[in-house]
Amino acid sequence: MNLTNKEYEKLNKKSSKPTKHVGTLTGAFLIGGGICSLGELLAHVYIKSGMIIQDAYMLVSITLIFISSLLTGLKLYDSIAKYAGAGSLVPITGFANAVVSPALEFKSEGYIMGIGGKMFTIVGPVIVYGISVSVLYGLILFIFQSI
Amino acid sequence: MEILYDCLKAFFVGGIICIIGQLFINYTKLTPARILVTFVVSGVILGGLGIYKPLVEFAGAGATVPLTGFGYLLAEGVKISVEEKGIVGILTGGLTASAAGLTVSIVLGLIISLIFKPGDKT
Image 1 (cartoon, chains in turn purple, red):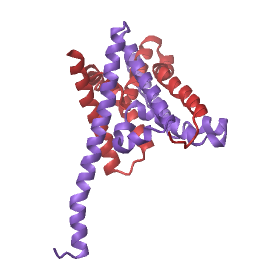
Image 2 (cartoon, rainbow over the protein chains, first blue to last red; image 1 turned 90 degrees about the horizontal axis):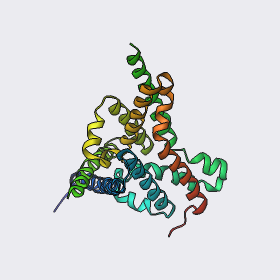
Image 3 (tube, one colour; image 1 turned 90 degrees about the vertical axis):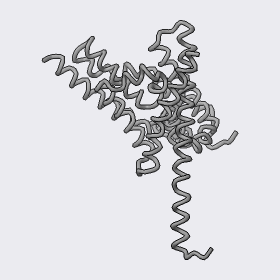
Image 4 (spheres, one colour; image 1 turned 60 degrees about the horizontal axis):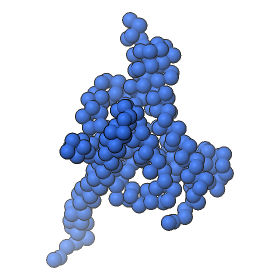
């Protein structure tokens, strides 16, 4: 086959880009879905053991945070994230990973500003905006309630 | 059998929410931190509008485990505490509802950081 560089580039782009995207989407779906169905399985176990539904789902999040923090400490979470992309970022496990990962990485900067400070590099903004928007929502609710 | 069906529902809904996150990664220049913020804020808004609750009732962990579920938790917490306590509830609702998750994340973050060494491979 005789191809100029430009034609080759075009062909290459055409054949490689979609597969990469399909691959990452599949990875995100399977691993993200897998984490959620593990959560659902745990919820069933907790509810069977006599917990009320709300507490059960709360404990599911806590269990997943525990597993993910431990896997991050063991340097295993990043290996999963390589294949999962958003599948390991979007679930609550990604939140826990985002807490532990910078805290551990900056341990050398000390216990106060290293672990204590860097812990919130990524999740700090999440908490700031999450809480602020929830206060805004509360304000709107309160105004409507008072009318 | 019911467990299997519930897990499948959680799998599909949770998986689709993660696909949305992956689309952000693939087609926008948003950093992971921005994506997490987007998901939590979306969760608060969807929770406030009453759209997210049916999804939680349908998919269980499929809707509560993704970070949109964390946002939903904040919105639900504020809603309940405003009903119970009025104006003070605006300020206490969000953190009260998310207290367990945040506390566990922070305490475990500290313990794991103290135990493990940075960069060591196992």
